[in-house]
Length: 192
Image: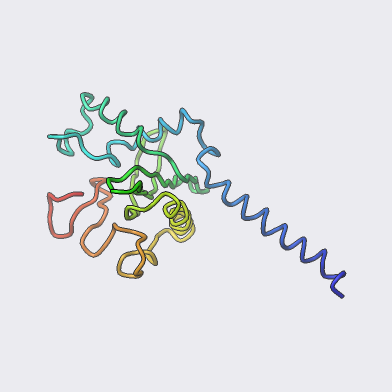
């Protein structure tokens, strides 16, 4: 009896392994970008995702005089996961070092769309808490999969879990797609 079921069991286990490897592979940035193109992608979103240069407003962040600042700033970032859906939505998970006593990073998950090479939509879906690298890798993968597969990370929001997953959005902070930046509810000029 066991001998008859063993090939079926092995086939099922092998199928699950192949499926899970293929699924993870589709989230690999190398599937979509060469290292040079990865850097180009980061530069394309740098004005939205990086901190503003000192004494610069959101209206001034696109000035060419800040190019060097953003080039240097984006050297700290890396693409952790990337995926392009069948309807041409680009999902990304990037991370950067975070100020901390111990080596920690913050991840930013979002989606965007291009039209004829121009960025026409940009949205950050979440930002994580400062996490140690191994924890960020595990949680980042789960958050990215939820964002791609469900369109949101609602189950990981601060009001839904006691564990540190997502710092933003929360009850006070939201991402404003029109201005392409984080804002505080009820405060027109506030941003993170």
